[in-house]
Image: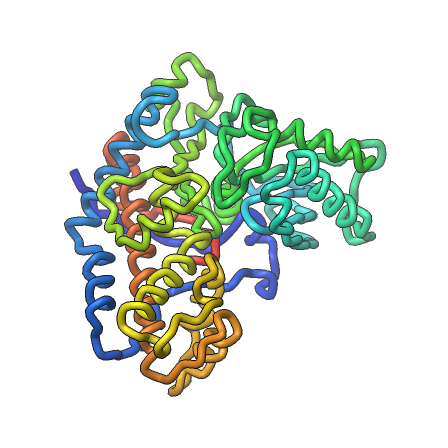
Length: 443
């Protein structure tokens, strides 16, 4: 079954609604001034393998709906994980006071404090900081990672000034956005199921991540505790709801990917007996684990085989920022080897995994110059490549092909979620305004 829906897409984030534009992240999108380059055998094959015709997208949407329903029926059964978040209500806009937030969702963590003034004043003031996580900490111990985060948070709290007002005698509380699969048992506790997005931190899987952070805060002597654990999709949905009561779905398209939505408790068989005053709960789909009917290339399969979780999170590996640059790199290496792209030999740096990142794709796609100078400069700086205009156009064709596939599949996934919601509650989506809040560098 398919439904036709009219959707308003709001680009927002866990902390994004409270940030000045200068702090928003760059985006990746298919170029509107499409480049033209003579077809090669490998480029033609790549476009064929990455094609997303409408019947395929309908299949992805239908399969997404079906796997959501299966995941809601049982724990550890077939279908998507469909993790309960134990978040029953979203912001009303009446909230007042000083609030802190910590967002750990990829290769950076972000901290924020915001003074809210309720319906009339909304956001009175805001501070924000972003800290890069050293690559070695992605493979360190749990204590080392959380101590690094707690230290960064402590430094941020020390900079709190007179613009922010906190009642004396109270313990500071923080909302913790943790964007990895957890089995949540309450609003302020959750057991890490597994790491994704390239993380392989030891000693954390099977533990309560809130306890890990609270213990690190104590080691730093920071008088603060975690009062709520959410993933970044829930944070994004809450941020959108703060401004727009028609927000129903949130999607992350960043280092990794996920989506959440508002579900009726009566439609969650695996939570039979759970009571909620609202009769609803936010469900984290963990849709990165989806894999049904996706158009995959040999480069996707090779990258998956070389990943830390082969055979898993295939949807994430085709649409998220962690992997898009690496897929493009593998394509370019193959073209260099098989068709002599860039000359007679493959530059050594181009053979280094993940030497190209999704921000590099974004920078190249924003080059509107006649000679694609920015593309040439980036290829030289990143991979030591001397390139002519024809080669740069080929590179952009490859980038556009991979990015367009990712965007189309993400869109089909969103339709699948809305379709499932409409099937269960006739008239909830169809014919009405529905806001999908989206955050991430792939928007």
